[in-house]
Length: 405
DNA sequence: GTCAATTCACATGAAAGAGACCACGGTCTAGTG
DNA sequence: CTAGACCGTGGTCTCTTTCATGTGAATTGACGA
Image (cartoon, rainbow, N blue to C red):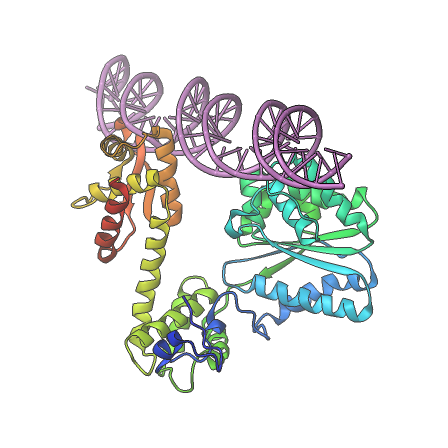
């Protein structure tokens, strides 16, 4: 996907693809990149640092709850601050360990069992990914915790994912470990992009989890601009960005809730587009193309990795779609879905399930499904496609290929 | 014409089953000394 | 005697099905003006 040009290491591939690239170091624009400096988050950095300083004296810091929309730098800032904290701890010779877990990554840590197993693993104790009673995993985890006296800080990114799937049991247990085991002390930093999330928690969990709260407001357009500039400096070669490119990227991102990640992605893809067109500069019109491409790639990616049942449901919707002004109803989709299943020899799911599948597509933003009441004629979902016309035919062929046989 | 009752076609929730996956402990087997 | 193969048990997890309950407005039909 990315032939990062490491200086002096020119594979055959690089020689071909490298000629006239606008990029100098593309990885800077990747979302996994950790910049040296985190811009525009001074306030939050200070807050978090202040809350965490007690650890350096060996005391237990308050639990922190962090929230803000996607791409507002929550993860980055937290990582940055905790990194500095561990460095400081090393200097001061106090025992502190920060463990970072993303609760959503690759579905590997989105249940109670898996989260605890993952935490135990991070602490150096290997735990099977399945097969043990949950209690056993807790036991192992506690044992590791108590192996040596230490202060632990657990950073749980996208914490709302776990709770929405499995309830707040884990958090309750985690926050209570301190009471039972005095050997080591733990504190939790929860990161969420759903602000309403705290309200859904059990009051006991809520009060102990959000002893302190840090809010990350969206970036505004000028802020995004300076972030882009900072990264663009190392990411691109000199003077390849046309006047206004950064401004436009920032404007796009600011339009939907100041998501810096999006802005960076947009800039990166725009660069790729420029490369592909053998353009020496990244022009403004490349951004439009990049935006379209990002959208299209996302949709195609989601759809082609979907299980067959889902694909048939979606195909039914697409099939019914043309020439509809009024939207499509669940019943129609289900009838068509049933007949397609029978024809291609796939087992037929119940309407209940198909209903859920449709609402999953809704959440993915592929269709728009609104529950409406047709009065005497019942209640149903009114479904319409959210896929742009231009992408539609491509998707249709992908689905057709995948469904037949 | 007005108003409450009715009714439809699903939505939405809860519970439970099926099947895949996995670790663990016990038993069996073959190889070794 | 021991290492490794094999098997049954008991656990989690995901995807489904089954059963039950909920729901919002068009329609209906009774009623009064």
